[in-house]
Length: 176
Image 1: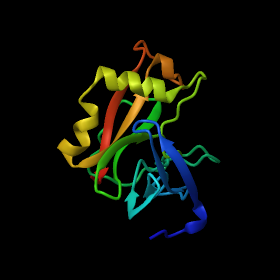
Image 2: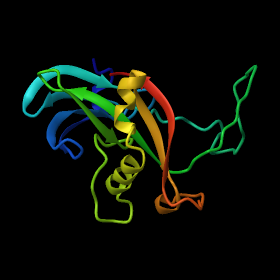
Image 3: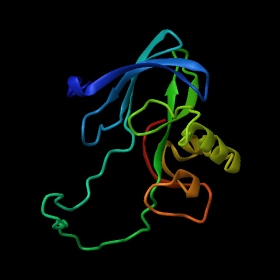
């Protein structure tokens, strides 16, 4: 199932949203599988392997060395506001009995982590879940895992925002 095994790292962590142990692999392979999870064990019990494709790393259409832009040919171009924040991916996984669990991850970690530092994404995401209590049920309603951008003044990157903290739905990926 793993196309380039050298770019997949093992993980064995407690899901902070469900309090259960999850074991598997996470992809470091550039492309569509970047950040993907392969869940192999939940709460110490082997499960049928669950491949969860997440938010791939999209490359900007310019050459870093020359600064030249290279746009593919297109019939229609749509533009959207670029939100500058942290990607949070919401996904569903199963235990050995078929019970479903909802969790959230950043691009190269299996779960959003708790930290006491400046960028405590776990606490920020908990705040978003309180603000939008319908988020946990969206994968079931839409039939897919979901990618969000966590942005705002408290999650500062390169753009300054007047809004303290917000999340915007970006897209869905097959799953659930």
